[in-house]
Image 1 (cartoon, helix red, strand yellow):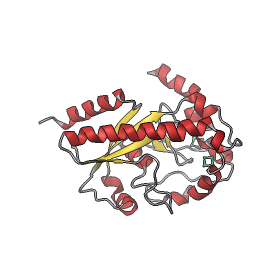
Image 2 (cartoon, rainbow, N blue to C red):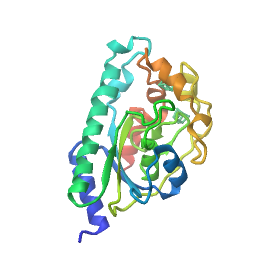
Image 3 (spheres, rainbow, N blue to C red):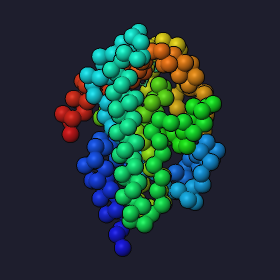
Image 4 (tube, rainbow, N blue to C red):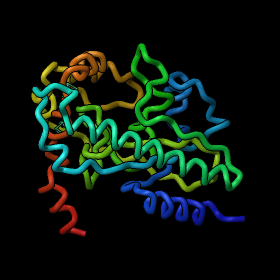
Length: 239
Ligand code: SF4
Ligand code: SF4
């Protein structure tokens, strides 16, 4: 029987060959109450989640104008059509690989909400990525990663495969409030992320969603200093 370590390594290699830039596995137990309330699935069936991230090209992130109509926006096309489809496809293949090996697995859709009223999915992809140790949640309610800041999107695969899990990391935003000032509809409260607090303590998702029906906004992604190419360059120089 393949050990959890080998299974995890091989699955990570497979995901990266298929286009993932980040790979991690989350133990969902620490967020049991939150997860079972939001997504209505049991942790007995799916105790872990594979989290996969795709980097958003700097040129796409930085060369868009929130004032242009959404229908004309190449930013919107790439980030929400091309990358969403690519992540859903990647999640599907990784899930199929796990089920081919005899494990239960379910690819959670990248963008389609499970609860349309609250605009929530079966599980928060960001929470899964956080528990997998791929990053921490910033004041902009996005997952900030060491290498890409918030310039990355995620998809999640729920599973019972005995994969090795990562450990969550936290790096507070501190005094920074660049994204809060940049948001045109003031959707952020400026509070730091706390696992036990619901999302609306920090973010008015409806305000953002209403604005984005017309505008291809992504200022909370492009403005964050942690995602700028200069920040990435200094990280890669150190390694
Ligand atoms: S996408 Fe734009 S409107 Fe929505 S939260 Fe980010 S900055 Fe605000
Ligand atoms: S812009 Fe500043 S406050 Fe906002 S998420 Fe990035 S580091 Fe945190």
